[in-house]
Image (cartoon, rainbow, N blue to C red; front, side, top):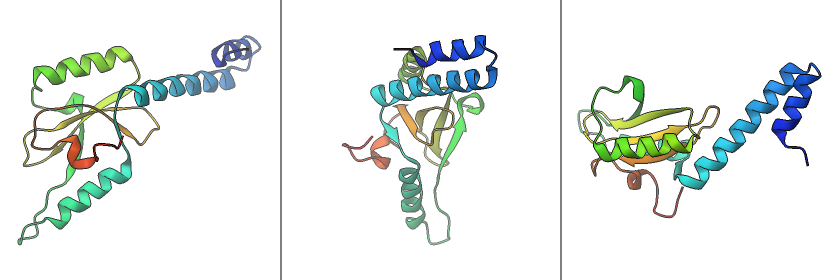
Length: 144
């Protein structure tokens, strides 16, 4: 049986460069998703929305409320704990993520690290700083 990569190479050699490139991209994405879902808990977008709605309902009398926001790691301005850096290194070794982001609540000091795959709305849990905001606040123990 011919693999997608072998088929892509054959197509490229015949001049079908665009379809070859698309097939290689699709094959890489399938591999990344398979690895991510095998090794990491994941959070669907609707869980993030539900968590933010819960935070909104807990708003203060003056109308202020908290919200979970996301920052790409390249723009994050704090130094994560060593165990989070170790978890990030391990996630990078698996090689399934295109980028990483920090989920945090503005007034809460300990965020969550997620891995991302391009064109996939799920976020993959890698680690969390402490107990201030934690994955269990978003997911039930049997989810993701």
